[in-house]
Amino acid sequence: MAARPRELTPDRSIRHFYGAEMRRYRTNTDMSLDRLSGIVRYSKSQLHRIETAQMMPPPGFSESLDAAFGTDGHFARLYGPVKREVHPDQYRRHMDFEAEARVVEEYAGHVVPGLLQTEAYARALLRAGAPDASEEKLEDRVTARMSRQERLRSDDPPRLWAILEEVTIRRMVGGPEVMREQLASLLPVVDTATTKMQLLPNNHGEHRLLGGSLTLHTLPDDTTVAYEEGIDAGRLYEDADSVRERRHAYDALRAYALSPKETAAWIRSAMEDCKPCEPPDQT
Image (cartoon, rainbow, N blue to C red):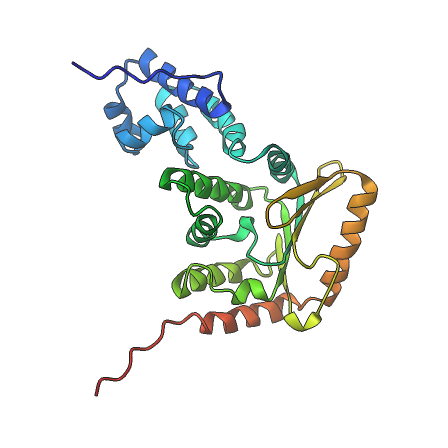
């Protein structure tokens, strides 16, 4: 006897609704998970986990579902709120602003900003932040972080300006190979038509933003919001006075930071420190 399909709870969250819609369209077209797997190129177990809201849909999956079911962008439209649902409420609002911003300005005090992280680097950070999390939970968080980068690769990306403390390129997150890959991924975006990156050397000393991170989102109507993050919590600022104060602090750091050309040279130097150690000579 075939196993009874797991009961779904579409009213529990948008991710559960997404899975319920996936099952509804699948059963309405008399399509098994095996058959769907052959069409969308995801395993049967992955499809089952997405359908039962145990796994977040990966980037590109929703478009494959729409093509399989002929649903005219239905799942692609659902994916936006789904990928933000894994974040706490205030952070979710920050994600909403990030998704519509025409300019994103980042100050990174400790680690490479999420918009610029490689998958391996993000996984190492997220594992360190939640060492007891299950592998499924960890992979959901990694997928959510990687999905944020899709807009940077779109036909109409936001302008991105990032100021990184020197420690962000010196801290060996994930080990030498992971860190070298991360640093290499920064070089192509140090100075382009839509991206600029500057490094703030350690010898600059203290400043207003030291100890946290800051993101400024300039929205299509030219208003700006600020998101400031510490170790365990973040705070969103939308009032003009608070945003202006943080804008002044950011602009001051931009004046003191290295140029993009100098920044690229420092990144290449840091990559040299990520080379694996040579084994001792046995002769």
